[in-house]
Length: 443
Image (cartoon, rainbow, N blue to C red):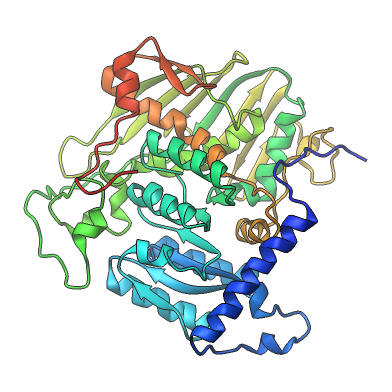
C-alpha cells in the first residue's frame, strides 16, 4: 500500500459529535422561535438527510459567481445543505438568488442589503463569499468572527495585508475555510501535481504558469451615470474608492478596475499558480525573489488593470516560476527528466505513463477531493481541513501582490517567505502592507 500524505486538522470523534450537537441545537431552538416548513426528509426517507444535519448557509454576493455556486452546491450536495439567507447591495441580485434558493430548498430564504446582518444570524453554520475581490476580506472576516465556516472565492483577498489577517484569524478561531481554487478538486490537476511531488521530473528547472491577458475599453468613465434604484452603490464600493458610477465598472467588469479587482492576473493566479505551488510542495512557503517584467497597461479608457505581464519568481530549490499571459492557460512543470502540463480538462506529459490514472506515481499521494463544494461541506461536518485552506490560498497569490509593488518601483524584490517580509526595502514593504480604506471601514 502506498503511503498517504497526512492532512492536518483531522478531528476526534468527540469533536465531530460536539459540532453536530451544536447544529442540532440551533435548528431545534429556531423551531420554537418561529414556524418552519419541514421538508420530506424530516420523515427519515432512505438516503435523505434530516434537517438537523443539514449545513445551513448564507450567501454574500449573489451575482454571476454566487448564483453559479448555489447551483453547484445543489448539484453536488443538495440533501446536505440549505441556503437560507442572501446578502447583496444589488436588490435584483438578492431577489434572484432568493428565488433560486427557494426553488431548490423551499421557502424561508431571507434577503439582506448588508452582509453584516446576515453574518449576525446564529442559525447559520457557514457563509459563501462570492463578492468582487475588494469585499473578500471584510465579508469573510465578519463571518469567521461570528463563528461561521467560510467558502470564499479566490483570490483570498484583494490586498496582501488583508490575506495575512484573514488566514491568521481563521487559524486562531479554528474555522473551516475553503478557497474557491476549485481546480484542486479535478483529477487531472491532482495527477499532474503528484508527478512533480514524487520527483518523476527530477530536478525542477522552470515552471510556466499561463493566465489570460487583461481588458481594455474605450469608455472613459469620468462622468457618473445615474445609479439604479435597486443598487446601494456606496455600500457596493465599501472600503474601496467610490469611482464615478458606470455599469461597466460593476458586475463582472469590476475586475478590470484595480480599486475592486486585480485584472486577469489576480483573477486567475489563485487558480494556476495554486496548482504550481501544489506540485512544487511550497503551499505554505513562497519565492525568495520576485521581479515584474513587461507589464503593460491600457493607454486609454477607465480600466487600469495590466493587459500584459510577466512575474519571474525564484524559489529556494533553484528554479524559476514565470507567471504570464504569453503562455497558454495552465501550468507546465519542466524538469531534467521531462515535463508535465495541465489545464482545464487536459493533461499531457513527456512520459505518458506518468499521467495514467492507474499508475503508481510514488509514495506521495496528494489530497483527493472529488468535488470542491462537497469537500467544504464534509469539512464543516467533520472539522477536517479542506483541500484549499486560507493560508494556502494566500500563499498562491502572494507573487501577484509582490509583482504590483515590483512593477511600481521598477525593481526586483527579495522576499522572506517564512516571515512574509520584503528584505532590505522599507519603501516596498510599506507599499505591500498598505490598506487605503475609505473612512468607516477597517479590518
